[in-house]
Image 1 (cartoon, rainbow, N blue to C red):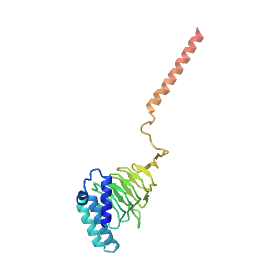
Image 2: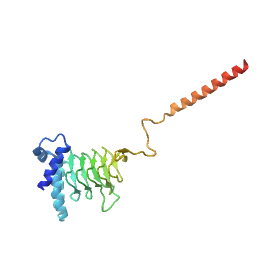
Image 3: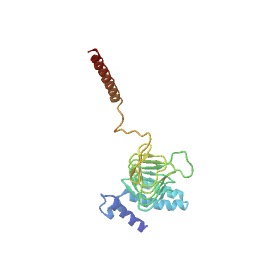
Image 4: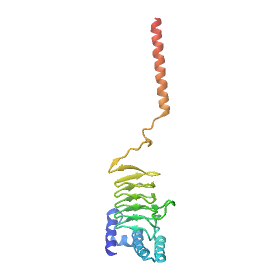
Length: 216
């Protein structure tokens, strides 16, 4: 437990520019308190002390605003920035070195049984307000943009944005999608119509000039 907390404090110092001291992180950061309580609750859950596990997790929820089901599996060095409104479901799994912002939900869709919640790989960033819903995997080193709603698997080294989320980058390269709307260079139908009318007018003027030359 001591070694785990030591690694966690170092992770906060590396990822949070507002972190000033070890004491401040240990005593005042809700993400640290939530993860620390979860370790105890998860141990109780694995030893079938379900009521006690739930009691610990609910007390932590009231104190931190972060709800982590005692059955969830969390890796090492998880950094929770701000944290208010985070919900992590019973069968969710989170790898090592992840960063999660406030308002994130790792939940289910209500359609699945057994494994109902997502598996988050290592070194994944999930932006504020994002929802990851369903029993699929978000690959290592991926990024989920703020307020995105992820409903299907994300491969490693990807960036996903939108509602529903779509992948826009893999391995740092842009991904093109058929049917995507380019809202910058989208066609202007009024401009196209005016251009067509201008071409017709030019043709009529040219025909009129040709007829006048024939008369002369």
